[in-house]
Length: 509
Image (cartoon, rainbow, N blue to C red; front, side, top):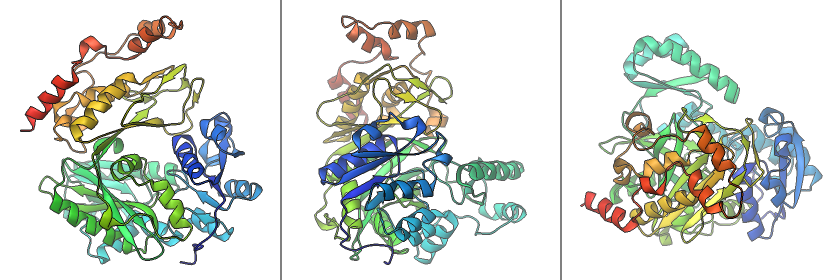
């Protein structure tokens, strides 16, 4: 554990990230009385995380490769501001072992796992080897270091359909599904090119594609005192092109016994690399409830709020507590998840036009409020959405005593959420929550691409309608503008939540 500093005092944390996750970490630090330092690129000079932090330092130009991915610039900012620790958030350098080692070498605390654990689990091939040795079930696939010809030869043993995956990747990058053997070589080339552009590493491998699988992950916490626990599962099967769109906790697919076995295996997988801090073990589960190790994310997840709402555990605070060298503040023996939580990722993209990213100035943003509603966001009126970073601009999370209540609350919150000036995917989420398959928990990782269509229930607004909405700026017309900004009008939806809930519950009898 030489990479850690047990009982290290942390008074100032630099957040090596941006957007909503940087704001989220800043808030946790303030709750703990810790000073914060934000870093920003030229594109983020007026970003919310820059405004919220106690201090902010410019680290480069707009592209991430010239700012958020430059280790030297981040360490220089930490030195200038006398930071004690660095929190990487997620994305960017959060799973970069070289960065974690550089932070430790600079005498700073890296709020995350050791470089060795990141190295072991960050590369999918080495991760497979580590968990295989621990007896964790794996999806059949190739071993490391194979040439394209060797991979093609092995493909017949693995079987079709199969998935080409980037070894160093994540977030759906460098992945290609292959159903026809004749398409494999082109898929290898395409995945490799994308992996080189995204991660600087073109190593790829193949594994069996589990058709109609569920994507279920377990939240792990581990401290330096030998304690490793899981905080239950999250359902992440609502995806598009391997990018998660909706997550919930717990999973409607799980039962008590499957949860127990998968939870134990998740802990075992983390212990296989002596993991410390917060992490996530991801699994694919087939329709017969056979489960296979997919990967480990050695960082905080985008969807961590749903676990926080059902467990009452602040994962960012726990990360900091563990990094200080203390025992984690929660024990699995007394951890009893309560209720149900669902998260919708709000992205700046057009769901009516193949989800093309949208850029521009936020003219109006009215976030939903009320019991059981949480919004993690980095946007505000006048905020500029640029093409340089991920399209996610906010997360809407709702909690209820049951899945039915959480869904009803999410329907209400989505109807209240108004964002003007750019296109966004709120209409997609509204349509999804009208889907009876989703309501009943009958979906899988290909559900959005194969069984869901935006044209089923709604039509897109015309450009003239959008312009008319944007011109409605008077106080008198404010409420009308809110309604017009919603692609779906009230008349097109069943406005009785009680009637809707009764209908949904009857379907599940």
